[in-house]
Image (cartoon, rainbow, N blue to C red; front, side, top):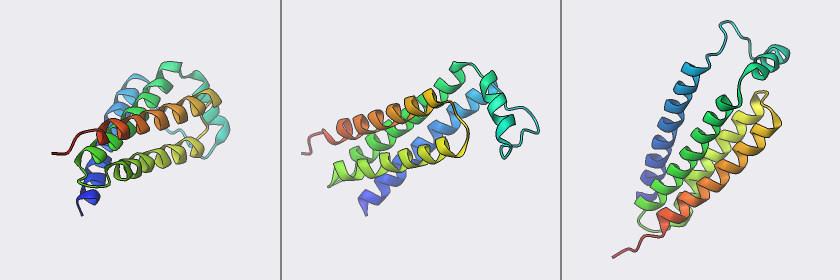
Length: 134
């Protein structure tokens, strides 16, 4: 039961991080009003106007969220810390993959975001599960 609460706690913190950083990105680079994401050509044209910083904010948000999900879940789980952290980080990773392949992002961003999210998620799990239990 403690592992389930650890996963939920890690996911809540991760989702709050993503929401906050996406709000910052939306404030800096707002989505045009009336943009229909079902029309691929319009979305691609809008994505081409965005500077790389807009995409990097999203990659930082996803990587930091995966790190925190893995770190918090593995840190607070009583037993099976590594597995608990991997589950939490994997949930964030899967959600990021769904997000990346639902919309029309540049290839460099998809690759960068995938690598950042997976590496930081695993780093969070390793760091969080490395504590000594007394």
